[in-house]
Image 1 (tube, rainbow, N blue to C red):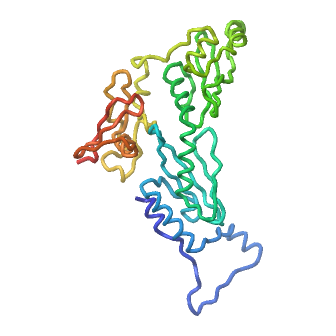
Image 2 (cartoon, rainbow, N blue to C red):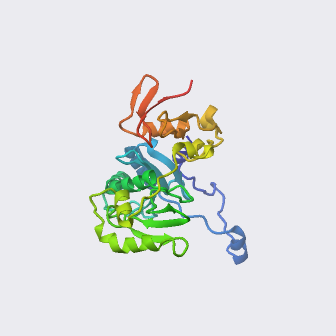
Image 3 (cartoon, rainbow, N blue to C red):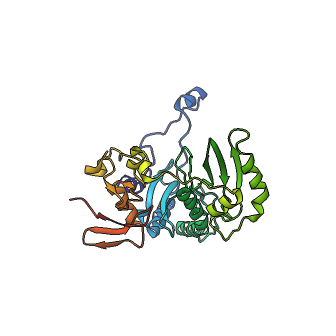
Length: 322
């Protein structure tokens, strides 16, 4: 793979050949024409250290490797307890490993990484996985909202988003913000719509908000506080065909044109969940990679058996194309 090929090469240093005299034009105009100086090179020990630490994690979990030297910014695939796939980006400073790395991920808030002289990249991954466990209740709540209520957000929600815009009917909406630290608590809300149409809902919210019960399901609490029957999402049959054709994993209808994808290069979705209440479309390539990242997936001969990422019904896909 291109990522592995890039990581296997340490940056070459430029040296004057024997008998030649290195020369640098120190004039200001010459330096300006030459452009900005190249980034400082890291010692060879840095690369051997990073490669060894990636080996501990597993090269198959590396999604990308970028940066001025090719390895200063690493992205890893991390799967949480519910099978959600997360990309953890780890940036290594010039002083690494003496200086701690920084992380970026699509989560509502990041953990504070504990780092010492003996710490390694695998420790960062482990701390991030523990952080994901703390967010399971939050994501379960957001999944419940997306499944049961009529969400009208223009963009597909990410794992970092803690808000949802719900349609109430009659051109009225409510913008919810769920506390990622306490997802079962009363959310912040903002009512949107024409004057006069929302008066009763706003009055009910102010009057009944103390009735919010953290032991109840989120949508039941919301309907009870508003004293209003919240609209359900459109049925599967009313969802536009083009939305159903988008892959439920990569969110694209067609795979990129790439030689590494072989016969699947540029192909449309080619697998559909057999559950009629789901009918989610996938690229078999995406579904195969997702199933391989789940510990509960079983393999029999050349077929992977697992569960649909959306409805948890059984799915099966071949290990490789013949």
